[in-house]
Image 1 (cartoon, rainbow, N blue to C red):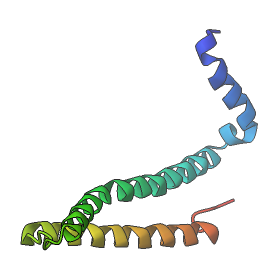
Image 2: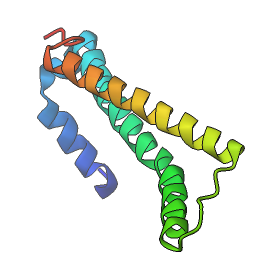
Image 3: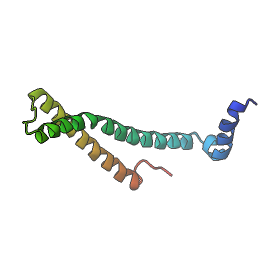
Image 4: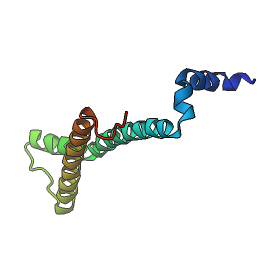
Length: 109
């Protein structure tokens, strides 16, 4: 067998016979990985969303240190507010999913 497939063959052998013999177990293990990736993806998305408000707040801080009034454009303020509200909703979802996973919701083992 080609050396590229040695790692895959090892993983399949280590997974055990039961995991591959019963399609339901294979599906459940795949779903648990998918949920974990979904929560991780949500975390990454929230981290990326926070870049824009951080830059805007930093610009406002620089203006305040110079003794100037920050630039409160209505469009920019509305955009920052919407992003922060979206981030807060995402954090609530992450906490909710974490509590559900801790209680075993979705685990059929």
